[in-house]
Length: 193
Image (cartoon, rainbow, N blue to C red; front, side, top):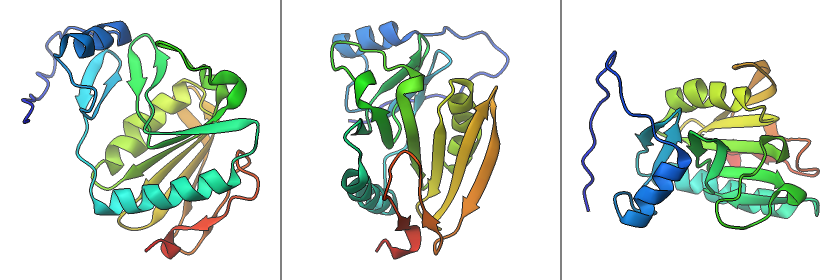
């Protein structure tokens, strides 16, 4: 099924939606649960379909994260995370403190319970490195990775402050990736094939 999309009429007022509005639209069939979209500042943003490189990297990271996950944490693959009343994101991977992940209808996971978010980019690199990086910093996500699935490069963001980061480190395909959120985790993006 094709979904009609439009470009924003810059400078003109638009109706802002809340997460509750989006959930009602899904219940009414206006939006489908299997559609790729996020709610950013009240705007529904349609996301591109995921290609082979994206899925290859996501699958390798999923296995590596699962093998390194401490008992105090859990992780989600493409789980919807509500960061505010008008922000609903669907990161590729998220490591969350188990104590903060309590399933239930419309459960709001506190950003302080999110230890790491990974966004894998094939066609959305500028979106993830720009708007998404500012958004995750604004809500105090401890660590945020943007991974270029095509070039096998990663940008590791730490120290969120306002809408920026105190540190952004670039890692190439042959550099080992590691994180305090996953003791024992080590992966070189260049090894993924």
